[in-house]
Length: 421
Image (spheres, helix red, strand yellow):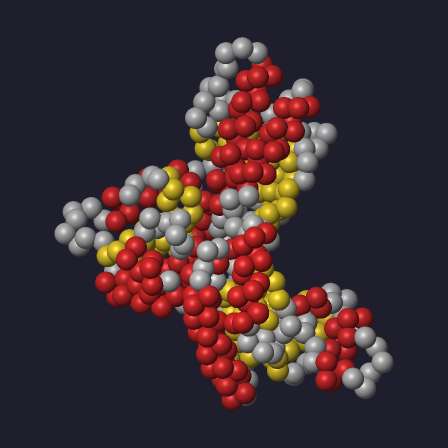
């Protein structure tokens, strides 16, 4: 992991060998937009029964939206009412002017406001604390014997009155590491709860940490060789954080040599890979290509054979090309942080076993992506439909702005033909 800090932006690059697989960017001016995970006291502005949603003022430029499924109700308030809370309509649970504790689950994107939940959670290195909840769980990605070991530890460290979810990163974590993580999250919650009780209007109670600390909290594990940071201040912050959670990993946090003539991203070939990741065309090793087009509703990825002419027969050439494409599409989704609905047009294959093998390879490649995905089988038209959870606007939006000449259409109209003169 390489972290480049500049006054205008902080960038984090995650590398496997020399290949860039993930990139994160944070600018000081993004504080109003990059609010995923922040906790607020919000004021309900209006409730829309037909949308089963409420708009909530959290002090940001746009009101955030809270859907019925994300509303949390106080059981004590419901005891005298015979209607089960789960069947109550949103207008029975919320009213305009009411103040609520809420957390952002999705950043505002375009004209849409942020999405909220009342199920507040505080993520740590190994566990997620869910205050005032009886939620209890362990990541399904962990093997069964490890889940059993962690369940025994959790029975001891689980704080009364609060829920805990054990993350995949807790694999091989010791009881002391888990205990320290839980204690730190509990102290955080005590501070947040105290601020919430003092708040009188829409206000920020908790802000997610700097992008580098946040990514290291989510990603950094024994599988990483190290984290290299070119800012002495951030290096110290990150090293202190890692030392407080996993002391044995603190030595893997390094300060980039200030005497090196090349900037950190040049040294690790990050910039040249970012340029390729912003192009609509991606070349495959055998000469095939992907064309990636983003629209308002979805992202379309077209697979082509291009320069790949194969050696034996057409079906084999297409099959091998699609296998390469399946691997590369999964990588590009992570690198470009493409979210929402995605449609992939693989090249048509006649043999059913080949189609199934490509889907198996695609799902295996997607399994390395920590962002939740859902993939459907190849359709009759040879299309794969899938979704990937959208958190932010993606790599392209981070490095670009709408063209003032064509307003994002990609074409310029002949005004002389359209005028009335």
